[in-house]
Image 1: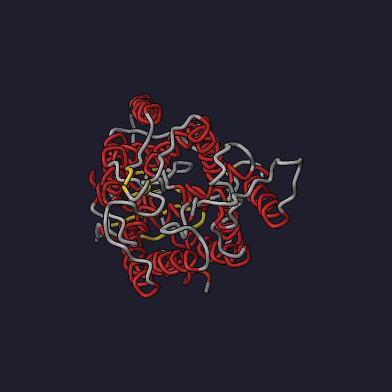
Image 2: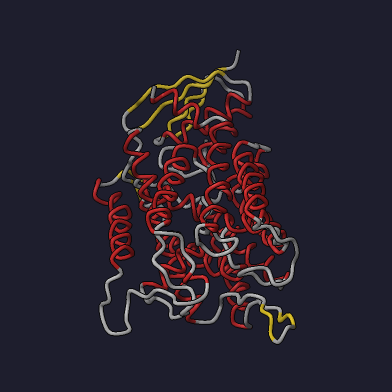
Length: 373
Length: 70
């Protein structure tokens, strides 16, 4: 039974089911209260969590999103049920940490992770096309390094407790999110009163949706970065059929719910600064491919005991704090007195994206090994 | 002649890349050692697509796949 299910989930229909589930649940979460074209966004929600903890002080993006613990714990449940939970780590954790930081800087220049890029496309936001092109370009660069022997070294099995750190941390975050304790007057836990951070589905709904996606994605290894990488690297369309299912289902659900709006200008929580939408995602895509997974995939790996993926996640949360504290993150298009004011990123943000690209290139060039096999 | 690929501890997509290099050299049977079900399924799917017959068994804390070609 377990073996047959494993085979199904590893099949093309399995990955399509996982993609379709995300494509269904994300627009519904938006309908139930999450921000527009952001029913689910791993980067944005980790950024909101960083804000809730006070790691940045951008008042409009602070909320302890239950979806993120849901993803990790869903993966933990699935991994335990199928006896795949395995405590492991030790593959250049510090490099993975900084790849996480840089991935977040790039993602927040664009305003979204690959999942949100797909969801923005399915909501009619054409700026997502620039982001997805950038993502593909970044992954293409990563593939060139992979072809020339890039890897971060072997991970090894380790003490069971190591693998449990991220799941237990997520339980803690979930409890903080549910009870919203105030540790001091005007202090953490923060929760936005306006802006995207104030837009939220009910905690139980968010958590259950997160758990469902976490379970399905752990079984099927759903990964947006991997989907593009596998096509470039070996013409393999397995993972990308799940991504396709996500976009198609999300598009249909958005049309049914009246959440579809086609165009470039003044899209929700998005800017139409094309160059930086593109370059931001080049950076993110390159960092994801060097780290071996998109932000969602890193959460699911962390949930099944991969402590290196956990380090990447912590890097992303740190990166969110840095991106907002140093004004690197993109600001959305806005309407000022009826006129469109195009958003984008600051000069500091532009420097950070370019610097991030340089650092990723150095990592790609220097972390290579010649195989004997 | 046979080939041995030790992909234990390597993260995605290294096990698949190494196995594909071995398939390109064509010295069967190819034995591939991996340590996660993810790697096992990824290698199996790619190898079957390349026309190999794949069997595997549990070994130690992982799996050993055997790739043959008729």
